[in-house]
Amino acid sequence: MIKKYYYSWSQLRKDVVKLAKKLRRYKFDYLVVIARGGMIPASLLSYYLKIKKIRVISYSHYKADAVPDRLKLVLPLDKKIKNKKVLLVDDVVDTGQTMAKAYQTLIKRKNKVITAVLHYKKCLKPIFKPDYYVSDPGNVWIVYPWEV
Image 1 (cartoon, rainbow, N blue to C red):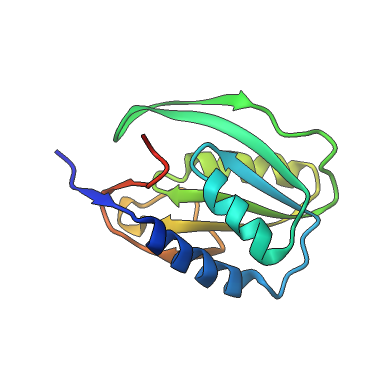
Image 2 (cartoon, rainbow, N blue to C red):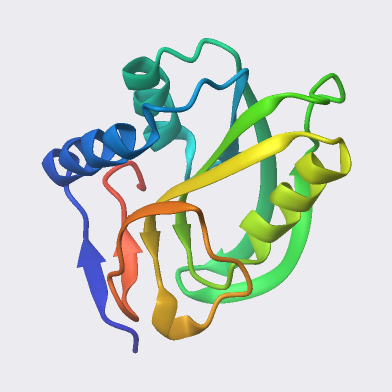
C-alpha cells in the first residue's frame, strides 16, 4: 500500500504564494487549468497574478486513489485560445501524461505556454517536467484538502 500525505489548507496557501512569486514576472493572456485537481491552486494563482481569463481542460486518469486508468479527455479546451501567452496549472505531476497532453494541445495552437504545479514527483520519472513547481514529495499519494 502506498503511503499517503495529507496536504493542508495552510500549506496550500504558503505553496501558492511561493509559486506566484516565481511566476509574477510573466504577463499571461490566459490561465488554463487542468480539472479537477488544479482548480483550487489555479483559482488562488489567478488572484495573486491578476489573471481574469481562465479556461478549463479536463482529463480522467485514475479509477481510484493511486489506481491509474487510461487517460481520457473529459472536457476539451476552448478553441479560441490560439497565439496567446498561457499559464497551464495542475496540482501534481506524477506520470506527467495529463500535463503533457494539455501542453501539446496548447502548443499545437501556437501558444506560448508556461507550466506550473504544486508538486512534481521526480522519482516516478514522469514524461513531462513542469517549468515551475514548489516541491517534490517523493513517492506518496497526496490527499489534497479539497478531496472528499
